[in-house]
Length: 412
Image (cartoon, rainbow, N blue to C red):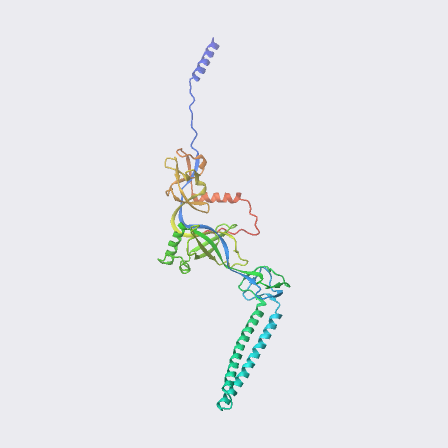
């Protein structure tokens, strides 16, 4: 009987348990890391692509005909203006100079003879012992002799010039290219033979194009810096404005080379709607850091903003509506803010529009945050988060294969 009672009690307990219901417990809001945007001074730049070009490149040609006797330089080295590069056989031109010198001496002797005879004829005519025709004759002979002297002097100068041309010298200071003709070959026959090229690398130019919209910004900039109301970009006004331009090569970080804007074309190209500009860079290192024909990245400062807003580049998302940020409000609810991006500086993106100072921007955990949903924010510092992200990128980046140490990044 006792066992029967215990059994019924167990059945009642089981029946009571079957009456309970299961309640769904939602998961906790996802954790995200948020930070307020940095406020710091920022310089706005216009960015371009262009090409480097030598300030001067001169073709060295044979200006007289003859056999190339010798080459007096090492290809690829720097030469000074006036340095001897080649020698063309001078014997023919030396003989021509001797002949011209002799012709000049003969003409001078004829002049002396004519002057002596003219003087004697004039004395005899005054004494009525000679005719006037003799005076006229020797006066004419004297004038002919003077003309012969002038002709002989010109021939001698030409012969001396041709003789000098047999000494082929560097026309400018710069780096000399390889020789295109070997000694022993006939040069200058029919046309001036190209022997080599000398290129001046210091300074060096970089040419780039400016579109019409940005041109108006640059014109306002130069007027402010030059203190002028003139709207024309010319060499004098550009020199007064001294607008800086920064250049970086394809394998360089940042823009380590600084120059100035020194030229602007006089008209906008109607086909492209752009204006050609030129920047000049000192390029004094040897060997030169910049050589002609290189692709170049350039940027030019246009204004300084004292309090720009910057966020880590990981915080910026994009969809069909454009770039956006996820911001956590005071109730820990995620809001989507469309933005307009500016330039990127050391892993930080300048936010031109769509973000208020003091907003808490989702930096880490963007994938877990959904607009309109709650999150569990963990607050951090934007600068520290960006620095740690940059360090991680450097650790994961493969080592670059270079012949020497990489150029340091320079920000202006």
